Image 1 (cartoon, helix red, strand yellow):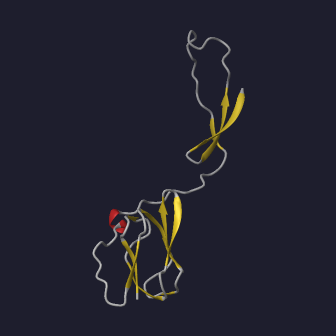
Image 2 (cartoon, rainbow, N blue to C red; image 1 turned 180 degrees about the vertical axis):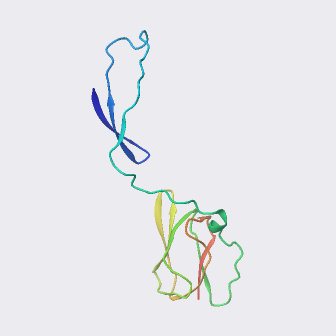
Image 3 (cartoon, helix red, strand yellow; image 1 turned 60 degrees about the vertical axis):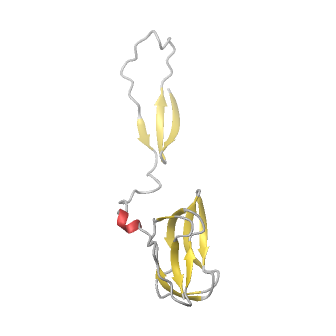
Length: 136
């Protein structure tokens, strides 16, 4: 018997494997049952999926004079939104995190101002140019 640690979908299992000395093609296999023992808890606990209406991004936004729209620089998924409506922000402050191509990209405030509206939601898929946050 040989023991191996195997990782499947983030779960680690201890597996015992028995070597068969005879020709496997000529001998029928007898009740081979895997022995799987989880060696640790999963690293990430599953959560309920978000409803599709929770992931929508408003496409048509009216912008008034003196307001600036922060847009998605590339397609991706919004991992977090670090501001809320009414917050004062400074130029260069991280407004949101956008995941694109397995990389986390910081969306920065283009200027000092006040967050007028957060147009997107956490977990939303966005395309290049989609409006994320409006600053005045």
